[in-house]
Amino acid sequence: MSRRSFLHKAVTGVAGVAGVAGSAALPQGAFAAKGPSVRWRLTSSFPKSLDAIWGVGPRMAERVLELTDGKFEIRAFAAGEIVPGLQVLDAVQNGTVECGHTASYYYVGKNTAFAFETTLPFGLTARQHNAWYYFGGGQQLTREFLKNYNIINFPGGNTGTQMGGWWRSEIKSVRDLQGMKIRIPGFGGRIMAALGAVPQTIPGGDIYPALEKGTIDAAEWVGPYDDEKLGFHKVAKYYYYPGFWEPGASLSYYVNQAAWASLPKQYQTAFEVAAAEAAMRMNAEYDAKNPPALARLIRAGAQLRLYPRDVLEAAYAEAEKIYAQERQNNPDFKKFFDSWNVFRHDQSNWFRVAENALSSFIPRTK
Ligand code: CA
Image (tube, rainbow, N blue to C red; front, side):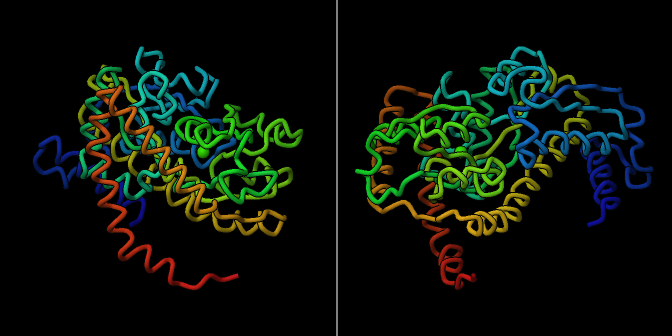
């Protein structure tokens, strides 16, 4: 669809929502022309160097501006420009900014139930997450939960299944994890600790020197496209997969509820449409850019390795233990888990039948 026809459809669609008769005959932007000028700020959890993720904020803003005939302007700021990357929730909650682009699981320190909006170990892939969010109760559960923080959320892109990190030495069984220092945050870190490794939390920019000096033995980041830019293959050549702790990290737009309620309905729709489009494009961008990045990394010396079966099995068992504990200790976690868990098993059963059977049959090419 051309950009023009997309805009036309979006604008006439918006008019339809507003219940105005004869909207198709009106020129583009006729409603926005009468609308108020609104200026918002979006604070991102991400630096501009993570261009595929960071880009979701400004892209959404650009489309909102177009859809509202220039009336609704959102300025996007990278991590640290207004608040640090991990304070997006607070900044949106208290109204420092009207909206943000973040990953919910950054806030598991406040409540472990925050993880469900992003990803959990051995959980949903990007497509499965979308299925849960839109058709499996995910939207309702996350929105109900975020009301406690004065926030309404929208899906904000997905990295796809992440890689399992860069190791300086090979991992041939669970025993090889003993005492290994690995940069890995969140639930993945809890699992690694249970398996005998020593998880570390290190910001992106500090990982390379730590790996180079050997103060850590391994580090996980995202996937080939982002990892290549940080150059990990030069200092830790074993590139493991899959990143079982992040089967599909879904990002979020957070919007302050009072700010949202103050928007004309048409601007809300523009935001929702633009947010969905930018999110979909991010998934597509990673899927397009990861394969050539992986090929370059392998040419540069990276050694691709599948995590041994016993590591995956032990990690799965630890994940189940963590979920059982969380269900017991946190009623919010239990509420999410009981919906999500049934859904994930149904999804795995289905994807195994057609999609995975086909993709694992098609021969690999060099
Ligand atoms: Ca990661």
